Amino acid sequence: MFVSHSEIKPELPTLKRITAYILMLILLVGFYYYTARISVKGEEGSVALDTPSPALGKAIATAIHQTVTDPYFRPLEKLADYLNENPECDMITIEQMQRWSVDDELPTCFVWDTDGTKFLLSQGASPWALEIVAEKLREGIVHDNPHGLLYIYTFRVEAENYWLGFLKVPKHVDDPTQMVGVFFSMDRYLGNYVPRLIDDMASRARFPLVSFQLNDPPMHGENDGKISFRILDERGNTYFQRGRTFTEDKMIYSESKWYPKPIVAMQEGWDLQVFSGDAVTMQNDTEDNKMLDGLFITLIVIVSLIYWWGSGKRSVKE
Image 1 (cartoon, rainbow, N blue to C red):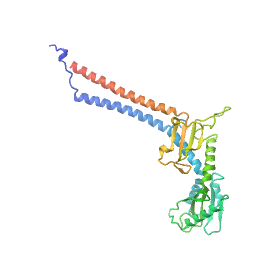
Image 2: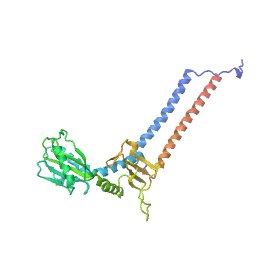
Image 3: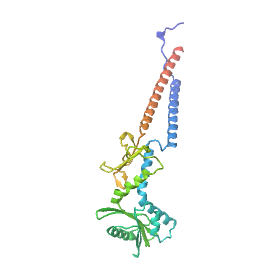
């Protein structure tokens, strides 16, 4: 008995075929994302600091922040560590504070005996600023500080803003023998010290992360780096910059994109931006990922068409 082609009707896909198709798609999707995850983990596990990326930009920004804050925080950190290791210590010398400082000019270290017999400084300072510092130290004696935390104050005198930080010695007593710490003019810090500290960092022959771009085109065979950066104030004006590459498509890190109120050089709202001459490679990586996704979707469509076409052929043969 013969059946005409016009009478042949493909059967509806059975539950087994639908299940097999779903399993096949799950396997394809699982294999794709498993290999993609392995690829991403491999990239994260072997981050190369010589390739442009947000991670590299953040590392450079961290180095810049540490460079400009170490001069006034390092003596206080060393003081706190020393007092933690020697809880019975009731005497700190000005020589110790100077030894813990990383810069000869910033900040002014001091040791003040609470009985009023001594007020020693590492360098000269404004007498009007010293008067305010002494006033804050006297206030610190009576303030309750059971955890021995660092006292931090900012004050203004003679049209200058000052930063003050100090600890009681011993730390966990109500009647300390000394108040020890640092202070400095924030205006001179921003005007003189921060640019000097950052420029010294970027000019080092062997900076541990990258080589920075020169401000002017290299001449006479000079080595030119590929990383540049700049600091913008709250109005968007350039406070400091190093290098020549400052276009948006070359930016690999911006603090304003990471923090709602970035703080650079102790100034809220200032933005630190890092650029790379090789940043275009990041765009190529993104385009490659999009191409892979497109190929994967196309593969699913082709496999689906072949599968259903094969299912129809099997139905006809049956």
